[in-house]
Length: 259
Ligand code: ADP
Ligand code: MG
View 1 (tube, rainbow, N blue to C red):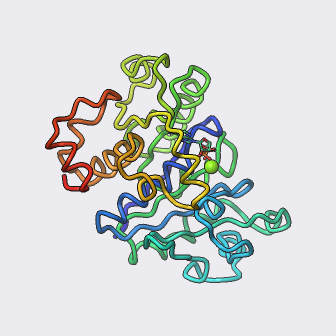
View 2: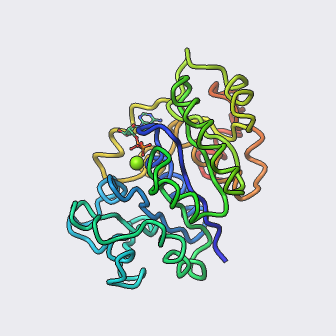
């Protein structure tokens, strides 16, 4: 039985795809079979981020009933599985986003985790992403417009009776809204903080997750903390801080991925 977790935000460009990729890669590194599904059907980019062939079989073909889901599954060199989206505009016309939940059922037996990278906003596509999961992670930046959109998203998830695991604050900067204030506004716990990290761009040029290209970066710590939190590992106790106040031994264990 897989855990189906959707990564959603409200506002676009806050880091859903980056988080989906790095969370899935962290879980994969920890020995959990994990598939990332690009459910951002109008503007998919997980395949681009991870170097999937330019004209792949995609989730659009699966939704159109043309192929079984296994045929659209690619394996990244790290072992993480990816179901990319189609970049062609025509492929949008023949699909129903509402079919997503049903079509993803086949992933249940072969995976420990299915991470669904959802669309921004609260349109049909984003709702299909929410419906397809049992659990939700909401991403926001530490700026008011993103937090306001996260609040709307959280209300919709509650109406749909989905379990919201918590909030991830991505691209954390020094002068952003305080974490305590974000938690108060959203009435949800912040379970991981990913700092603004310029190495994210380098990872992108290498078509890989930052947890592979720069495993010792602060962002990588944030993603591994998140994965450990989902697995119920005690590492999370250290999580909600951007300041690195870990002991030398903790840093060493973290660098080795031992928790
Ligand atoms: P979304 O999927 O929500 O639209 P993306 O994951 O595509 O957002 O991220 C948008 C942009 O922000 C990308 O260029 C990505 O590399 C960059 N980015 C995401 N997270 C960070 C971070 N923590 N530090 C620096 N850049 C980031
Ligand atoms: Mg995206």
